[in-house]
Every structure is written in C-alpha cells, then in structure tokens.
Length: 491
Image 1 (tube, rainbow, N blue to C red):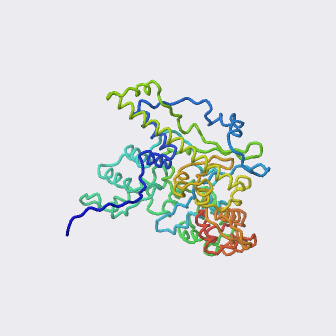
Image 2 (image 1 turned 45 degrees about the vertical axis):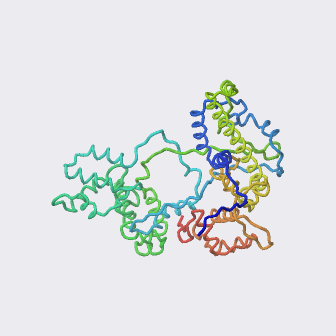
Image 3 (image 1 turned 90 degrees about the vertical axis):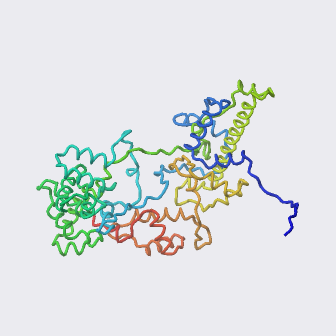
C-alpha cells in the first residue's frame, strides 16, 4: 500500500455557535429560559435587564388590549363570541390503577355511581394548600414516635412504614417484613399486631394489605348506628369482586337486598377512601405560565407574546464603550459584548418564531376558538412549517412546552396538532374533535344503560363521522373513560 494525498470538494452544513445557541433557546420552556437568562446575567457584565412598561401580564393584560389589537395582524374570524371557557385539559388523565389482589376495576365504583364519567373536571384540579406539608412517611413516623411501642415493636413499625407506598398500602407481605428485620424468635403474629396498630393511625386504613381490608377498617370505625353499615360490611366482606365488576344483580340476589337498598349501601361505600395515603403528601404545584395570549378584540382574534415571561435584555453601554480600544486587556470585554449580542439576537429570533407559529395556529383553528373542541381542524406540523416557510423540526421545537392562554383555557401548542379521519363526504375530521364528540356522548348517556363502543360508533356515523369500533375504544381509553360495563350505575 502506497500513501497518497487526495483533494476532494464537497458541501457540508456547519452549525455555528450562534445557530446552536438559537436552536437550544428555541426548545427551552419559559422556566428553563428564565434560568438560562439569569445565568447569562450573572456571568456577563455587559448584559442588563431593561424595564419595559408595556409588558403584558396579569391585570395589565386587560388594559393593553387596544395596543395588542393594533400591533397584531388581523385574523379572520366569525362574529359570534366564544362560549364559556372550558377547563384546560393539558393531557389526558388515566385512572389510577390498583395492583392489589382485588380486581382493579373496583375503584371505578366510586366515579360510576356518583355520575362521574372518568373525565377530569374543574373540581379535580390541584388546589393550593400551603407552602409545606409532610409526606406520608414523615406523617407516619411522627405518629410512631408518639406511640408507646416496645423496642422490638418500634423496629417492626419502622419496617412497616418503610413498606407503605404513596397510596397508603403495604408493598411487602408479612413474611417479607418479618424476614427483613432479621430478629431472633420474631413471629409473624407480632408483625401483624403492629400492622393493625398502624392501620389505626391517621389517615385511617393506612398500612392495609389490600383494598378490601382498607375499606373494612374505615367502615368499622363508623358509629354503630350508621345507616346501612351492616349491609355495607356484608357486601365488602363477601361480594367486593362482584361490586368491582358491577354485577349488581348477583349482589341483590345473594344479599336479598332490594335495588334501592343497594343504592344506599353504595352511597355509604363511596364515603370511604380507597387510597388513604393520598390525603397526605407534598402540596407543591407547578403552575403553567403561558407564553402566548389569545384574545378576541373587535370581533377578531389577536395573538401576543407574554412579555412578563422573559426579561428584556440590553447591552450595558458603559462597558461596551470600553471595547473600542484594541488593547489586550479589553479583549475580555469584546468577547462578552459579542456573546451578549448573540444572546439578545437569539431571544429576538425565538420570540419572532414563537409568535409566527402561534398566529398560524390561531388562523387555522378559528373554529376551535369560536365553537370548541368539536370544531377542531386537522393540522400537522408540516402544515405550519409550509405556511411560515420553516423546517418541520423547528415547529416541533417551538411547540414543545410552550403554552397558549385562551378564553377556553390554557393549552400546550402541541394540543392543536392532530391526525385526521375522513368522513363519508370525504372531508377531514380532527381526531381531537372526534374525542370531544365521544366525551360529549358519554357525558349525556343514561347511566343505567351506558353506551357501548359499538353504539358510540353508530352515533358518530349518524353525525357523518365514520370510524372503526377499535378506534372509538382507543380514543375512549385515551380520555380516561372506562368501558360501558364499568360505567353502569344504579343511581
């Protein structure tokens, strides 16, 4: 082999530091971007924050609508005002499932018999309850230390609370807890005795080994004169599996209860807490800060950036004037000046891109803003990319973890993108709109005769939306709606 030199010509896209910075800033959420800017302010003396009295946010947002209207391009819209705001649903909520010995569908008894379809409502949104709160372990530890345990029982109690999950259930068997302690002559009966004492701690029923034990502990703690207590005990003790499966006819037949009496029993059972540990926990809540505001002004939808999200940066002219000299000592100032200009320019590009994308979304989703979810139009990332002449990957970055505040709630920008299904007339229907139609049908159904997936498919077809039953089932599950057999209720 003989060594040789060859000269080749080719084209290659090289990402400059400025481009890398712009791309990185584009995909950051508002909170991450604020942290990035603060780090830049701390490290670069040529950067400073400019006070901007025109920033929009909070109460000032209402006072600046005229300015917004004049600064934004006009978007076509219908003259009808938007309906009352719906609760913002940023992501579908899946029902919390139990991996206990009892059938997991039991927990649906609570929602099904109270008229809940499994869809999140405003009442289910987090409520601020203070800055600090003990977690479940600390709450139980505090009670253990206040309880007169012997030395051995105290060691058992510590092992027991270590094995309790956030729902309040034991994750280890009695045998496993006994073996983990490695104490000589320790009997399982001693562990059971300590478990029973912990089960009387607050919240009542914590440390239960299964759902049935948890509910019975809480039921037994009710006063003896509680109406239907004995019947509820009978149902939970002997028919909990049938109750989980909604086999009401079998329960009525075997317990000799009449239907109206079983309804009373179910209402008592619904007062019990199937996850007692959830009562105690960290109360910290992450609040969503919108990046975009959408308001209807003079019959037209106006889009604006939330300027209070990101501080306005400027170059400190006092330090910048020191970079004029060519001395070696001023090279540091020159470098910092260049970095400051790059950052400011990257932030401006980020804001411009975010605003362009938001405007395009609003323009394409006029019907959603005027009429709601059922009017959502099918739209994919490429549609916006072509409309504003940008790459699809850029649209993906700018719509991730960016939120839009609208009269209908707060939504992540990605919420407005969905696949399409063609109806009988050949028109495209958004999958989001179909989900909304399914949710509405379930919300309006007769609880004693809930709609099956086949029936929902038929009802959708009558509205001109032809989808397969398996598609309906998939969309229903994504909404956190239980099957018809689990939505059936007596009330």
